[in-house]
Image (cartoon, rainbow, N blue to C red; front, side):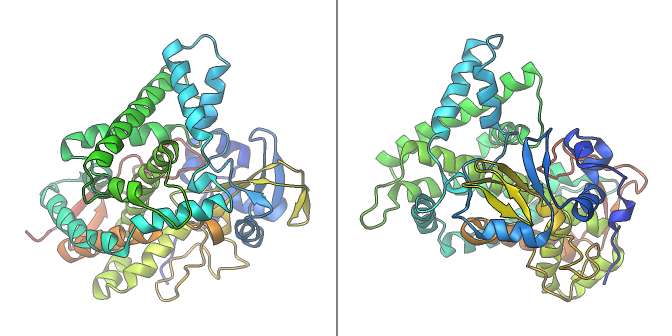
Length: 436
């Protein structure tokens, strides 16, 4: 066992403090979760307009039941689609932005993967599985290790490296861009698109300039991949776009353009931002704990359990959204039909009724029961890819770097302004004696 900061070290706060994006609560929301879990585990929040569910048992029950709980609002009210709805009601915004918002809303009418319910979800997932073949994923392991070595070669020899920009972000961004056939020359633009889609998640308000920037980038993403899909139809190549266009099931229609574009958005965000946050949180935990580093260096097999503990303790996505199809009871509380539900997986993952010593890292017990990747019908499609990337990267890093330490242990770490996406903005780390 390795000690972790328990929930009592998080600031005293309410869930509304988290929704207000109070920086110390965004950084450490687990105290607010624990208070909510103990006092009112299923409750309606006026500010969010949703029922908040915090206990592991209740969260799991909802995740497993795709019949009574719909995914049609899977990104909740704080999302690009949510902002788009607001834009159409705001005559003060430029006409171009309003047209871009209308395009987003029209595309969103095609319920895809994360936003679809059975039986549509089963059809789409089967088609995507035909493209995400084990061969394609396995082939990436060597590429990730090669890229990791290149990034380590660029670490500062006598000073700190910001591992977000220099390690955690380039690895998943390069992998998903490679899968989608995006050339290296487009990497900076690709990152801007990813940022645009995630800026809308987990923040309940945005200023006008931010909204215009978001939808300029969103529209550019749609334009680029519409053209790329047209090219692949004429000239298929060995990449994910061509595979998705070719995917067929007996008796089923191929994926539509709207379905394809919405899938690509989900691949971009899930394959890039969340894995970046996973890797950064892993490095943050390692940098604070030399004994943990040494344990993983001595036994690389434990990296798998370590990553599951990072996913449990510092999940890149702190919650999942559902909508009650009919009036239903959750944890003894009645939720009306069409009631929006926010399942706080970040709370469920630390529920002491399920996990002994829930705030500590346990490398010896496989705690893959965490709910960070969801469960049941909508378990995360890319979880094996994320784990493969992260394990390959950490294996190389631990082999080559003899010491990983925070550049300034007293400096407060700043997290992105979101109550849903949980990620560190910048993390300067020093690496002693990296082998060359």
